[in-house]
Image 1 (spheres, rainbow, N blue to C red):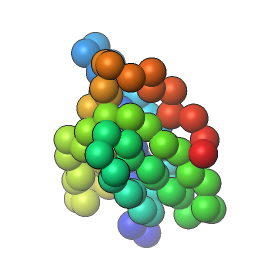
Image 2 (image 1 turned 60 degrees about the vertical axis):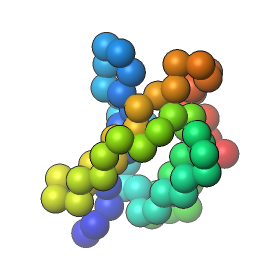
Image 3 (image 1 turned 90 degrees about the vertical axis):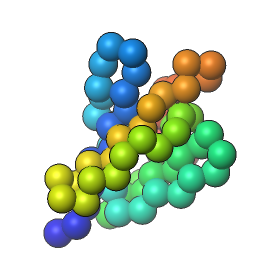
Image 4 (image 1 turned 120 degrees about the vertical axis):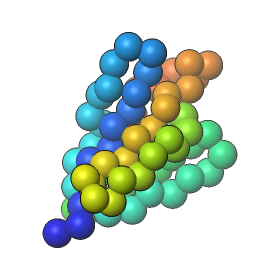
Length: 72
């Protein structure tokens, strides 16, 4: 399958935010991720990398925003 894992990186850590991501929507500093079951999470930051070979999406967290990756 072609699902990806969404990771958030900050100054000192790399955190898995969501698995089985099939779609991401970027709106300024907000990134909305959706998985194969229709679950959604929104995080604040900016897209750093999408690696289709390793099925990874990397987001750099925005230190100016509280970033909890809460379900939407």
